[in-house]
Image (cartoon, rainbow, N blue to C red; front, side, top):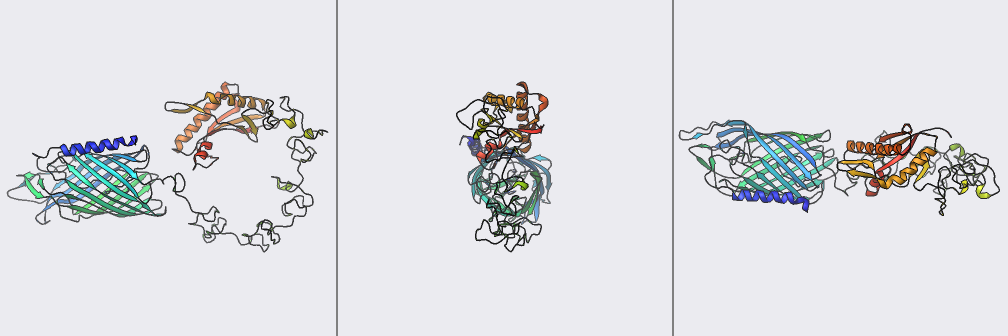
Length: 608
């Protein structure tokens, strides 16, 4: 909980200042606007929520708030203040996915007197622009996760007396406010229900009475919360006392409940650009309650992310009951595996019988090849298997001779001779390397010792890379860390990097040097490798541009190390791919660890 110390400090300071402020000798006037807009990035415009997601995420907005006739006397027929309009700049910072700190700067751009006249009272002439009371806030989410149905948060505000009492833009003393907020989200991505309810207390160091604050808002959210529309209610109830108006002589009026309704809409574009507007009436005639309030805003507020465990690490789970790759929301056959189709009525549905053999594709083990019906589900709808090698005649290139698997359709089901040295793989001690006949079965069809490490090919687990003898047959004659596979030099350990200050991944760690020395040896042994690409890869944590730059720096650092240790620079290239080429699932920790890697890919090679 040490991360949340700033929240406690802010709350304590606000309380102390509000309770110890001066309570006598104030001039006429006060902060007329009862509305405290929610911090930047909040769900609603005027009702605080428990939302505090993200770490070091900055959100902000500029808002214009217009109030018509906020002070009316003589039964609402005479306006002392005709209009007041504030331009607000608000910034918020989310920390540790739990704490939100914020600042709000209000500037009154519209200040106009009404038509109130009295032979005995002169009301102060209002002027603009006028600075309002600066507001600093902190909020802690103490229960629930982002985008869950129920969350609970506690928040506080500290308002400094930077505004003018006489001009109705400031209180003339420090204020503190506390509130608790409940809120959350129901429903799927495409149509959600947002809600928030808050209540608290405002404590003042002026002679204006303390007050209870409360509010609630609901909204429908569309297209993964890109658009939301709904009503908001907020109010403030003074705990007795009077208000002193800005007039000569000083004039007082009873303090009473102010309540307003606002119907608001927000839309988010281009990742975080947010615009919004709202309007609504004052519900009572108390001082500070306008007959109409209108609000417009523009800001930056990226879309909220799903809490961990709600589907994937970063987004809600997509439902696909039949596991055919087509989400249920667009699958016309959600309980029957099928295929994509441009026809919405057939999307995700199985074709009825593509090979017209009388066996429906859902039952046909060979849906693309005509066959016969069989009681064996693995053979149903497949042609016969004349040679009994488990490859039916429809795909068996040698249907009369038993054979095996092959990536080449022309060799499927045929006896295998992969190295084409005239010795069948079944009798070939080295089926992947052309050799000569030998009376010793282990060496039959094997070359002698291609890598020159003194270990016979048939016993050499790495016949093309020099290695040392090893009691483990799988390691005999192999480098300790390196293998050459088709199109790639494979390393058995990850390349590690040292970190210096803010520079990450720019220096190869000493722990990886022994392994990289073997990479150098293998590259120099394989003269047929013209160009080897050193590739840097990351997981998908963080910003895409940052990960791309990080992976490039790491690839270049490894390239420089290889050059400095004996590899010709013209045989190397460095390329960072960020998180665009994962090899494992980024939703789990082990998958992200595998995705953070350096690879050595052969991109240009001569024939031996």
